[in-house]
Amino acid sequence: MPLHICEVTTENWRPVTALSVSEQQSKFIESNAFSLAESQFEKNGISFGLYDGETLVGYAMYGWPSHSTQSAWLDRFMIDYRFQGNGYAKQYLPLLIQQMTCQYGCKKIYLSLHPDNKPAQKLYESFGFRLNGEVDDTGPVFGVVMELLIDTFELK
View 1 (cartoon, one colour):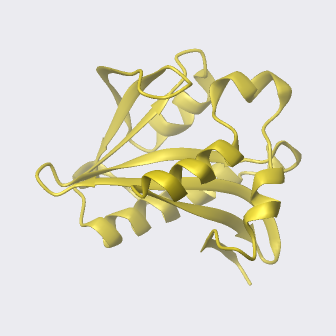
View 2 (cartoon, rainbow, N blue to C red; view 1 turned 135 degrees about the vertical axis):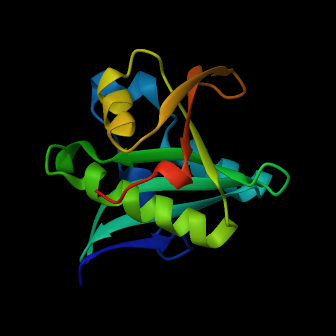
């Protein structure tokens, strides 16, 4: 089975919470346990495990759709530290963008990232995301906002 995205359920939530980024990256993103709780209790986001065949390699959460602005948020995206450097982020990001576009019919996708997370910013920029000058201070990790206009998105 190739790379695929699977919604987090009662069957796979524990392995998802066990995923983590490197110690140096931990200040850049909320824990998966926090994110799962957020998606369960706030009911605005959907959590997904990122799989390579049967192997869980990462986690993503998206949602917060706005019909008035035709937009949604890619709120979390991480590859477990044991699988980083294998090109997974570049392979999963287009899958997530396509899934969000189909599910929500969005014309714009937002995300926020810690301003010191330059590798992530470079990754997102390579897919067409641009800093929009806004700040996201609603969660435990302060972030700058990036946006992707779907019209400009090209599958990598």
